[in-house]
Amino acid sequence: MSHISPVLWQFLVKWMTNFSLFPPEASKIAPQADALFFFMVLVSLIGLTLVVLLIVSFSILYNKKRHPVATQIEGSTLLEATWTIIPLGLFLIMFVWGALLYFRIYTPPANAMNIYVVGKQWMWKCEHPGGQHEINSLHVPVNQPVQLTIISQDVFHSFSIPAFRVKREAIPGRYTSVWFEATQVGTYHLFCTQYCGTNHSQMIGEVVVMTPDDFRQWLAGSTSGNSLAQNGERLFASLSCNACHNTRPDARGPNLVGVYGSHLTLSSGQTITVDDEYLRSAILNPSQHITQGYAPIMPTYQGQISEDGVIALVEYLKHLNSDYRLQQTLNTTELLPEQEGGTTPASKAAPAGEVKQ
Ligand code: HEC
Ligand SMILES: [Cu+2]
Image (cartoon, rainbow, N blue to C red; front, side, top):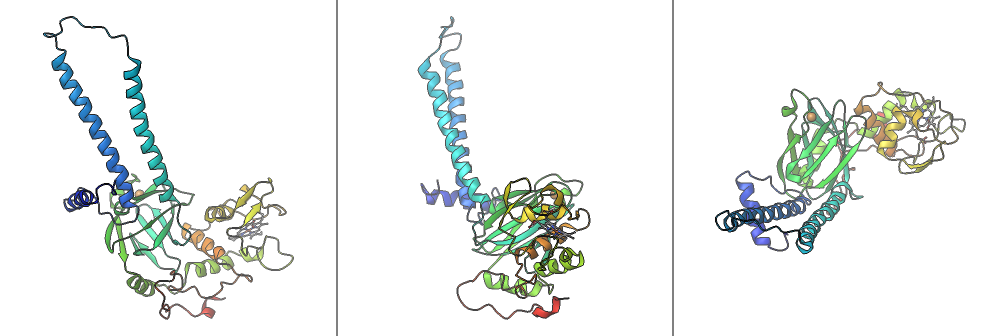
């Protein structure tokens, strides 16, 4: 639709945004989602007009004064076929269009940077791979695909950024994900859009879209010294995961190096691909899926690790190198994808040796 009449389109959207009737279109997907939305509004309006016109004209044409005796019509195949096939076609267009859009919204591109979002009564916690934490705010760079891995710590929430036309449930016990690419620098609303208790209406925040340079500065200024993966490395040691998972030949647990993204065969014969969700569940419900060739001796860590802890462990396992050490200090800027050439500024993060214990 945006291709049919760009001028009218721009005018309409600008006008509605101006009068706060409509959130700004600040992501790549936003104009596409709106095109479908307006198509549906248009179809509904045409349908409504048609029905109202028919009601009015029929009640005039066929009122009792003009037609005292009703004519019985037994049915018309042509008429019935017409009013079945045309709406069906329109609905199918909406369905296919919507499905295509859905897949685009929920399939992140491979180069997307990942940020973890934890919902809880009543706040949103966002965790960047560099270890930056924020509450009720989310800083992202412009023109860069960002994937969110979302989970709830208590009840159902729903993470929504209207200006990006993005919304995803935050479910206790399961990761969900969504992605977007912001196209305009600015500050936008962030909502919980699922009633989640007394202070639900205060479960709001802001999304700050920054230029890549500003974003890099923000990351450097907000670092806590340790990346998420480094926190995970510590947890891995303090929870004694390394008692079983290590590089020794007589290790009781499988080698976890390179486990992320690999295909595992379970004792049930089933083959699975290891992703964030699988790692989480392997840590919290190990008995649910035993890897082939191993005894079911791994204890459950349910209730012993917070969601943030699990996220750190997952992030650590993703970055694991051959000797269970992180390849290098994952500093704030290294995690940023390359931007318009040039080297990244020197990092403020801790030197490599500091976190090893
Ligand atoms: C008592 C030994 C033991 C401890 C402690 C242990 N694990 Fe395991 N772990 C195993 C065994 C054995 C398996 C394979 C059988 C299974 O799937 O349960 C396994 C499987 C896994 C898997 C699934 C991947 C694969 O290749 O099978 C992950 C991920 C994992 N462990 C992570 C951890 C983390 C993280 C910790 C610490 C919080 C931990 N483990 C603590 C023994 C252990
Ligand atoms: Cu909520």
